Image (cartoon, rainbow, N blue to C red; front, side):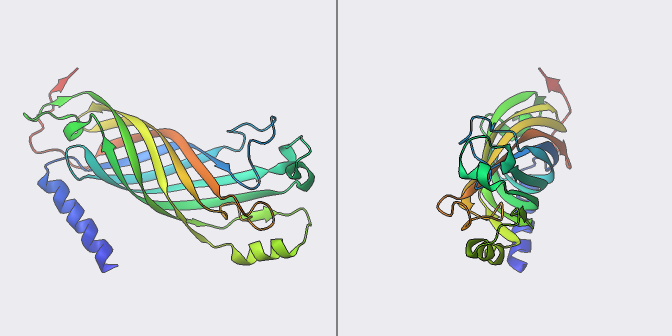
Length: 239
C-alpha cells in the first residue's frame, strides 16, 4: 500500500512539474461479451446482442507532452442467454444463461499521438486539437457471476462453482479519437477490449468450453474536464 501511495504522489508531482493539466473524466457506453455462453457460431447471434450500459469515472495525470497515466473505475454488467441460439449447437440444447455485475479498477498509460501538451503550444496558447489515442494497462474486476444452469447438474458444473473467483485480472487495450474543445474540456470516442486471460468472466469454464477464454469490450463517449489549469494558459483559442 505504501508503494502504491508513493507512486501516485510521484505521478502527481511529475504532473505539476510538467505544468500540464490534470483531468477528471466521465464515460458512458456499452459493454459486450464473447465467451462460453455467447459467440458468433449462430447466424442469429449478432455481436451487440448482449450489450449493456457501462459507466465510469477516472483521472488522467500527464507523464509527458503526449503520454498520460489514467486511473479509472468502471461499473458494467455482462450477460448471455443461450435460448437465443437457433442452430443445433450445444448452446441451443443447453439454454443456459448468466448475469455478472462488475466494478473494474484499471491503471492505464495512454498515448495522444497528436495531442502535444493537451492542445497548448509552446507559448501557452490553446488550439483546438483532434488526436488519435492508444492505451493499455492492467485491471482488477470485482464481480459475482450468477449462472442459470437450467437445473442441470454435473461434476464440471460443481467444479466451476467452486473455482470461480470474485476478483479477476483484466488486461485492457484500446484506441480512441480525442478532441480538445477548449482549454478545460475535451471529448473522446473510445473502444476498449479486455484480452482473453480468464475463462470465468461468465462463471462457466469446465462445463462448457474450457479450452477458450472469455473476453469483453467497451465502446462509448468520454468527457474530460480540467482539474487544474496550465500556468501559462491565457485561454486564447485558435481554430
